[in-house]
Length: 164
Image (cartoon, rainbow, N blue to C red; front, side):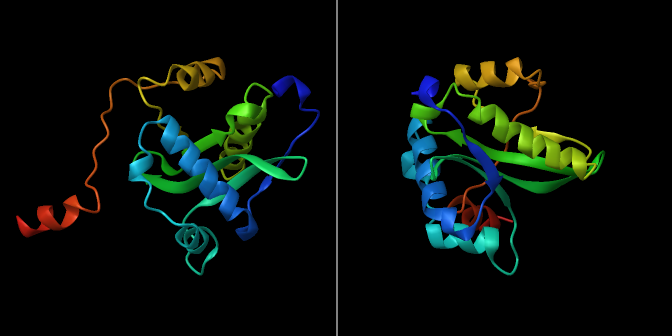
């Protein structure tokens, strides 16, 4: 399919894009073997991205009026670098990969981080996701093997707090 794509449009996401964005999130979770972990809803995505206290930003990729990719990102703070952009998810439908859409979405987020003079742009990639690792390396990105990710899930937080 990628050879057939004549043109695509990268633009800021809107509330009307949320159903397609949610679909892409689920598609990514299936690819990452974690579909059961998606608990976010379209309503929550809409509120969190476009409500009174929005906490993320969104770029979408359109082909012939259909959303085929997205980059969801937000501002994080580094005590060493100040404001930074964090790319939470970059997803392109499998049928549209290889046409430059993922790169264009990545560039759009990077350009916005540069425009805002952020200290850096960050993201994560699973250590087994060789296509994504190759994609980021091809862009010249630095992949840091030294840092481990920590987390407490919604279910773990109450148990943790009860032991304090």
